[in-house]
Image (cartoon, rainbow, N blue to C red):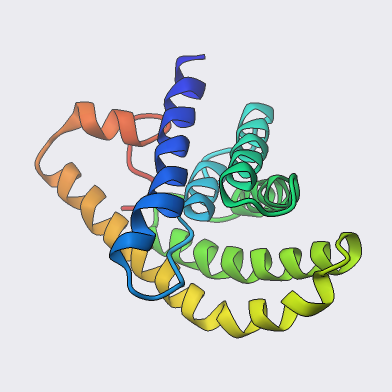
Length: 178
């Protein structure tokens, strides 16, 4: 329960940062998808029901904050969590390249799932899919740059021996990206 509340607070902070704070500092319309990175990060250690519920909940909260179709990001984040958790068990999770590959594939999968869901379940899906595809390269670059920054921060935390901070940031008290 404490872990769920901790991740919920971190997730809400990320949603507020992504939807309210970053638009004021970044002059471009695109922003790194911090929620996707968090869901990918949580899905790599192990696939769990509580993690799936957490990914779905944060996706639905993101829908509330962004004003998109309610449940769209909830189901997209749930699918990404389940697929990444299932496939991620086959990879060496302690290598930071796993997170880079997961971010690349996750960003592409998120774009594909958003287009599919909008075309199937939304009346306005026809007008948005081309715009979503055009934004994919920049979104991928922003997400990868953010992951690199997070990797550097976690490595610095690990080097300076802030074990209590590392325990808060990682699911089991050890970095998954070293």
